[in-house]
Length: 497
Ligand code: BES
Ligand code: MN
Ligand code: ZN
Image (cartoon, rainbow, N blue to C red; front, side, top):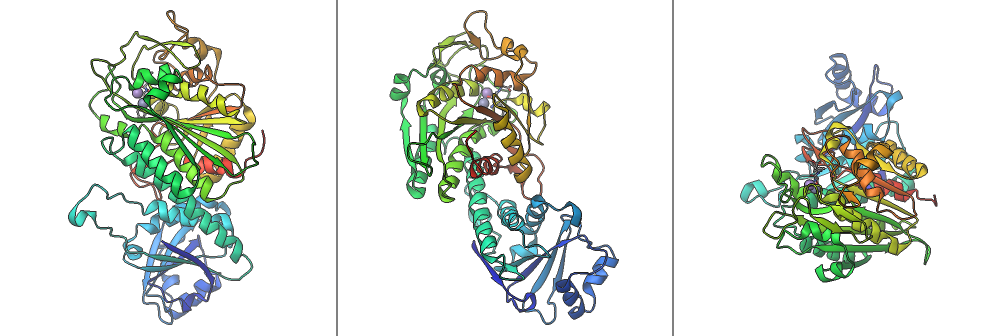
């Protein structure tokens, strides 16, 4: 997508579609809308009076061939009540307009946010457009593989030069952030036969070359040498060898302590010997969403040149049953030395995260954030509406909650109480990996807590929010890529805790 910003008169822009982002109107107070109304013999007035279009969020109306306009059509899209506007109003509106036939058939478009020169609104608008129009056609053939969206360029039109530089930056930033989120979606959607742990490592490697950050991957022998017994207990049943992927981006002070991100990378989770039911098991190709987020986060940090030192750890495995797979009741020794009784081989995410969190100590991190499609129980905590977070450091959790407000990627804190810690103690080993049906999401957090070091830590459970079940304006049905905007926002505003 070609993106630019310019200062022009709306009527003089020769594009296929001029898109106006319009707040709720009772009368036409905006001078641009008034001139459109005048040349169209009151088309805008008619839309308002008939309540066909009033500017409510997600409403859309098309005016074809407006006289005295160079544009072939004007698309009006509602952003909602003026007093309630926020960045997400624009993200949603842009998501709706991104899937309109009128815009998809255009090759060039101009976007104008009526009465707003705010940079965050412009950033959100391009994010909404790119996220909303996303379609993955990699596995289609013939006509179905053709992209129906013909749009090639978007020009953001501003009223004056005053905010031009600031908004140019914001649009570029929105573009990079949205591309990061789309990278997450693409990886999560990729079937496990096209994305084994080895192939995930290859993807990380080629991205590290393109965007200039460091790449390293421990192979099975190196993982054994690291004594990552919890991780190896998961990958044992699969023919595909595990990989422990280590990415480093140094945009901060030389030698400065990094922030370490850890992402669950289960390339396929069948449950192992504790086999999952067949219904929807195919969705478990996406059980590496956490890894995809931390990979895309480091790509995005590098592209945005964030002044921060960052490490992304991606423990990548497949969880399959076989004659050599880990069995319920087995006891394994984690990298840290704590023993774990495997009650349920389907509680594999916490096993690989346990060793990855312990490995994070190597980097003397200033903080560690892990992100994982960890518990099915999170569906009963916040549904598809938000991600439960836990941790040991209130200021860090507050930053994540604040980033949620800004990015509209909602999170909410759960406690780690002694009840949950006790729930994860085994009668056989130090810990067990499943503590029964109650408080599954918080108990998983309590399990992970055993493996952290002396640093601020937060855990984000994105099970279910990584998928949108019915389709929202900029989250088409399917994989959301949630967590990327959130983490990038946290990292963009990073200060020592
Ligand atoms: N990957 C799943 C969690 C999950 C389930 C994510 C559904 C997205 C949708 C995880 O590995 C898992 O199976 N967790 C178990 C843990 C239990 C056995 C303690 C679960 O939540 O049922
Ligand atoms: Mn599982
Ligand atoms: Zn899993």
